[in-house]
Picture 1 (cartoon, rainbow, N blue to C red):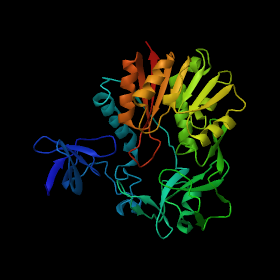
Picture 2 (cartoon, rainbow, N blue to C red):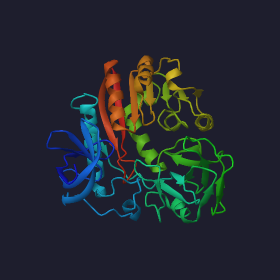
Picture 3 (cartoon, rainbow, N blue to C red):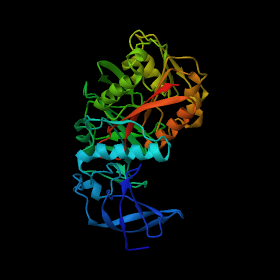
Length: 397
């Protein structure tokens, strides 16, 4: 199947364009945009669908632009949508979410709202350590890496030190900075996030702390939050603020103030939502399995009426609450996680999702468990990439 010519219909979750072959089968085309006529060749035949490799664009979309970062042409898999003009990203992501809700979630006409706002450059990046010690970003769907001359997606506090950094004894490096304080730190680890005990770094500026136990403090919505290197934090403080604002809106003033009862913060991480969404008089409970994040949450919530339970959400014994906020990883709640959320029987649930298909699947399960889906907000917190964040508001019927 070489020399195929197909018309791209729309973007789907993952950032590929969907097209159809003459025999009716679905074809996924990385790098194509909706409406474009492209020439492509067969990359993978999975029977009922195929993946194509983009050759050339015969009829380009008006929204197509030349990627600004030269590393994209070299194969960097980080910024998968640099060929789409920046102003079209949010609307494209709204359509990806709409498609997932309809096809995967079978949820009909869900009220969607796009959230304008610049998340800014990333203050945390995860990079591969090459055999010669240089740091690079993985190629798409590959373990190979591309060494960037400069990364336009990374905060200048990180980007400025990349050319001189060298590492050894580790598979990957996580680099984090704080916009609030200017602090910078590096954590060396393997691909599964385990400390690389015999690792070393050279070429780092004097102020950079190289230690898996290091942390930075970032101010989000007026609250100082400690984020350890082993803990998850949003792509930037600005991204976190945009997300917090939407979770607040979805929770509603009454629930966030604790008027409906306690707040349960599932997959609560460092306590971001407990510290910023729940009112100061609300009792909160963070359920989180990452030990470092639990320690951060206890620190960040030390002045509040809050508890932290170090356990997998799926193993947590549900208790009554007025509000549940759930922010699972990219794989979503799954059946067991959704069952836990539903078992709380909270009058209001806010579900934060970073994968539209997993999010749609989770929402379907919560609706089946007795919740009404009030609406979904769509945020673009990862500029230049296909990644999309959603915040869904649900009410117990």
